[in-house]
Image (tube, rainbow, N blue to C red; front, side, top):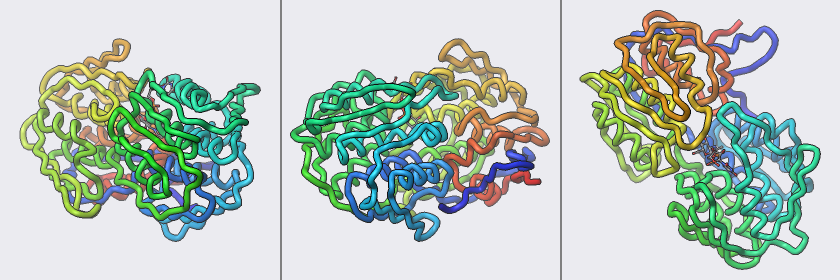
Length: 437
Ligand code: UD1
């Protein structure tokens, strides 16, 4: 697999240093969406043969999913940095061990496809995670309704559907992205019709449904709360382009908003950031949306002249405000002209960034799933530690605005989801470097 920016090893300093206070302006193009690419890679298991995925981000999470597929027996040809040909014809194993699931929780996306293809799967139970418990009970309940029996022993989920998968009506308790995806990928080859009520509506769900339909599946309603899947006997390999990464785009737009911009971000559909962009406008940013005919001509430009206005935000499943944009927005609000409340409704324990931001002078108090943010005039550079992927990116952003130097350590988290984070920020004028020894 191609290399990401970061390499961990003995003697390697896992950190990014930013010198704050310099303008951030210009144009960048985002990659394909991490959260889509991982599931599309898993979906190739459903159609024995060689599928081609383009616009795949070159990030460490994609490398881990590559390892998962190879472990199952797939052959992966890296045609260029963003194009993978995945041949799932030789896949002959249905076992995904803990060492891979522990590296990346999203490895569990192979559960649905493996059951659909082999009638069985063994996937390690994901452990705890630094953004909350992140259970998979809804995945298992939904798949049970389709005829799957589960036996959880020695930390592994043993799934089997000896009589095959059959369509069913599944009502999700919460519009879980991962559960919707696992169900879709199982239902597409089940016998009969499956309806998923309270399905997740994220753009990445639509991307997956589109790919399944290109493979010969019969999925309707993706992007709405009710998805219907009429099972087919078999699927065929396809060529598919990964949808642009709305969260990578949102992160760079947030950086532009923080520093004033203008920053143009190309390669994503601005409707996928609908509520984020509306909220940013209400916070005093100017946003120009670009809806061109192709990926390269779609995007948005952001700029800001006046102060950042405080605004209450609450995260919710799509089309609500994405939890994956909460940390970056917290940074903006921490230098806003007043106080507001940020409420996290999707994940528990997702305010670990707050303690690090406080080290940089932010005034935040956390009360359960609420953060009370009192805007301060300026942040001051400090050594901080990335708590997770989005929190890490947000701390680098904070460093752009802070006085002096900020050194963010544990930035392998950032490598999981951002390709070329440092070079992209550098191209926008940031004084930033990856520390190497
Ligand atoms: C995906 C994204 C992640 C994003 C999240 C919400 C990937 C690889 N990750 O994560 O970046 O932040 O959607 O948009 O695509 N839950 C249960 N039981 C379940 C499933 C979920 O209790 O069976 C809970 C989780 O603990 C969490 C909430 O539901 O609190 C949302 O989870 P879910 O939508 O499933 O997120 P992921 O698919 O894990």
